[in-house]
Length: 140
Image 1 (cartoon, rainbow, N blue to C red):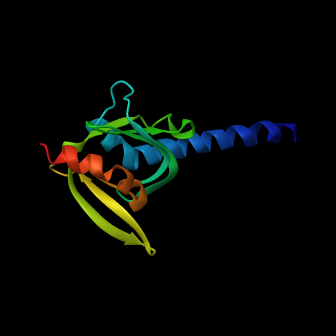
Image 2: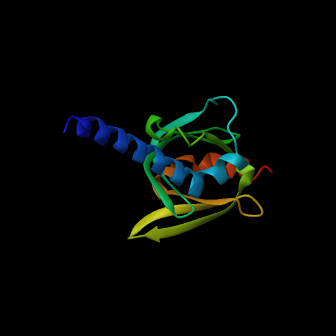
């Protein structure tokens, strides 16, 4: 019986780490390999945002900072183990599609040519940085 008090927490931690690893390989690894983040950038911080990377949703799991060069996505502490920060230059966003999921508007960003990944975010989030994106993306 005393072993259960040790086994259960250890197995929960192991399961959490394993799930993080699998999720990172399914969605995030390709994005992180294509757009590694350098040093921390300055800019406008939007705080916690939700993202969909291809078909996998991350709810309130990333901090978004954007400036004239692009957007920096940094994972929150709980998922940082296998999810490295990324920096996506504006010029890498090839297509912006307005979509709806369950009556909620969101924006799908197609990154890279050929397509590296499709990144989805709430329309409200994209609207806050849309002017910066439009200005600098059109200067290419």
